[in-house]
Length: 401
Ligand SMILES: [Mg+2]
Picture 1 (cartoon, helix red, strand yellow):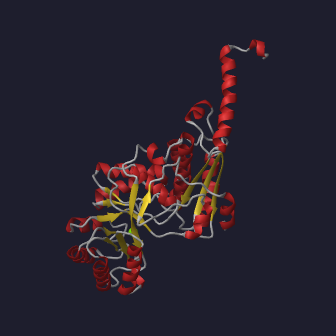
Picture 2: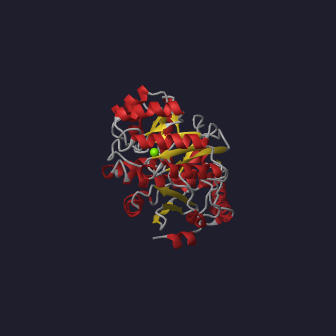
Picture 3: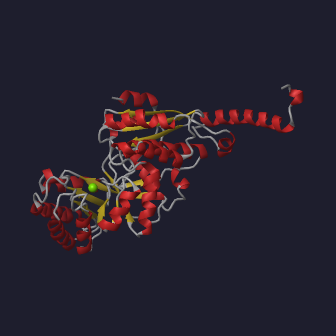
């Protein structure tokens, strides 16, 4: 077709495409953000997906697009080789050449095309990393932080509680020291974890109680203190312990019995006034439905890097809100996982309680242009597009296994 034969519509289209390319190039150069107007004119495509296991025991996911925007995510690192392999071999082929903005379509594709490799453990943990990266892309493309895409911002700052583990293997005095260190760093809420699992039932409830008593006394009245039995009690022990914790004052009582014992959880929740929390071993909204209805817990604790990402974690949060449950997600990953969590908490009216923080991993800081900052037990909700984090690729490669 010669220029003489071009219709007005075709000429405008051609001119528009040039403008799109020019603005897109500027957008990429100016911080990886492209305006929504461009998205409307030229669908972007996923060009590659890569999960990288790091020496720190972390799995970072990068979703690359033909527009130059790169989304980042993180998977639960239960087995970094297995989870990264799942992303690279099972999920990548499903998503390359798809539009990354169709997140729900892609989530269902990932979930149900690989369903028989799940739906607990490695499969949703792998999906989590990709899904978080897709939300990061949507944010970068629209120029919006993820919490705005979820519906808005109820709080600019999220209070965190210091989650302090290892209680089953140490004496009370040592746990007190760890708690005092957290308080010295500005935390106003703490939780002590026994880190047993359901294989060690009722090992030493007397010592646990003494540990809790000493921690509570050291923390004083102004500090919120929770106790995580990490699935280690029988129902009767959990109830008796819970009553003693209540006498001492307790903020929340987590996973008192084995995670598969919904009936037992319900007995504990019915017997006690303290809010009973659970959910770190659940991976989908359907499992949370059963946990809520059968386990009768008060606080739901999905983990965004385990429960198939922001998409599913958000649906679980909404499900929980219909039952008037409190939302206090489980969280062990201090960078991308925590930031993804903070966006969800920012966008939820019922996420006012302090959120879990398992401690920093300073060795990860170098892979971010601006690493997440926790100050005096608080984290500011990021206002930059997407997650608000950017990876330094060379540093990522340096830390790669
Ligand atoms: Mg826990």
